[in-house]
Length: 387
Image (tube, one colour):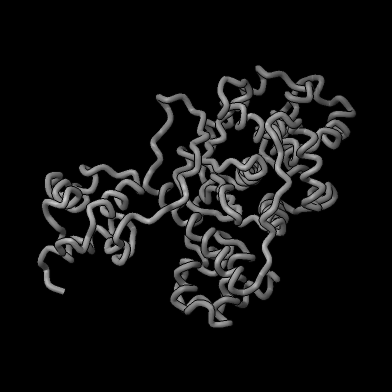
């Protein structure tokens, strides 16, 4: 194709949609393309058309295939998850490009799951007994934990938090929820959920600490059960000042109660022996966190709720832990293992089966799983071992 303007082939409304879907303004785009804001405005007002080379650059900036720019009108897309982040306005960061791309990818994999399941005549549970904000989160946690079929004996037998995270994810996947681990700025959000479709999706931040991921997993599960798609920072909020904060408080309380059941905690030998009466030491807290495979913050918050630790002590320790918080650095990764960790066994298995039965191509498979074709044989072996 020559380098002349594409005339009416590219609709301004489509260009505006592609830009706004990533939260970019015309100045951002002009800077990335090394052109003027006036040029971007001319493209978006039909005063001028981009050349094919310019469109290729736009495709790279907007992370859209070239074909998307030739659509007759912007496609209908499901809405952005509601922003449940509760940081004060002066500390709350705008949703970044990386997070927007993670949400877009999760939406796409949500659609792919539904389509492949239908083509393969595979049944995926899409019905969940919903809960209400007026329900007692402690009671709901007991009920939903029973449904996950993870006993306390199993939880206490896990060797470490990595095994615990895998066990909890597997339990949720068996309910029909797609669980993804995608990279996003940790200071911006810790996870999100997509509840507004037949296929429910939970995304946890791949850069977060493992025990923090476990809590995020069940915080987002709370959103799924409340049928609220959400983008969450899990900021510490325990006082109700808005509807959003009421929901966040509920999901925090639900997640804590599911992971650290009230009765089990109160019957723990540390509590029963009253060793804590002389003060909660780091050693005592670590013992509890290692048994339940959760963070110290989760344990201490539960102790406050159950009346065996003070709110002031919790606030002090929380600030201390936040100052030491670090994100995970994965280093050099094994692509097949990374693929399974990020997408989960059920989704990877579904796509592999679709390729083997001719429903999708090898190229589709590599695209859906974000993996090079050369790694697929090893991926198949790993999935076979996990099945």
